[in-house]
Length: 241
Image 1 (cartoon, rainbow, N blue to C red):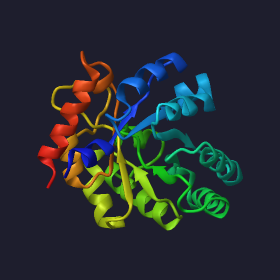
Image 2 (tube, rainbow, N blue to C red; image 1 turned 90 degrees about the vertical axis):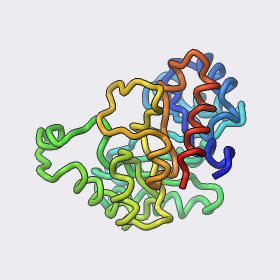
Image 3 (cartoon, helix red, strand yellow; image 1 turned 45 degrees about the vertical axis):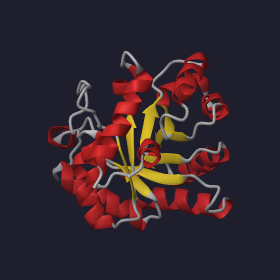
Image 4 (cartoon, rainbow, N blue to C red; image 1 turned 60 degrees about the vertical axis):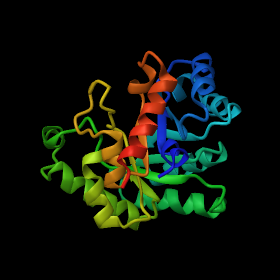
């Protein structure tokens, strides 16, 4: 794997508070990472301007809003995400097949395959455990639920899933080589674990079959964020099969 291929796998989580912060981080890391994640906090604060700010720096965007609502509402929201020109957008697989099918159908009807974002379904959050699932009435194991939701997402027209690195191999086996897997819960060896429960290093995640790695604090909290991004790129290259 080349350094450019490895770099494109890194999605930097823009867990910041405003447009000035976006300009700062996008200016520093454009060309050093493959994409920037705009999540709920930032989008609630800045709206679509957050996406446009990244794009002004030449950055690509993963719009991480995890839609979960009635099918028609989610379908319309996904179409609006596509109009923003983002590369990845997601919803919650627990919303069910009808919701996912409505979103996929609406986006594919309105946009060509070349211009639309890849649609992802969130399986089980990386902060979740077996106890978390039991508290909401799910008795299946985390791994069983992740695979079940991944298969449902694929059957419903999703391009891929968001899942813990520890479930990558199971998803890849169940859903095949072309199904996208985006993994938060990735921590390079030099970084703290923080609040993620099911984690891997970047090299381990890529070797297991992850397509994209969502990484925030290990870069943002580093003394030299650019150097941290380069170290992660080096680790992916060194650990790639």
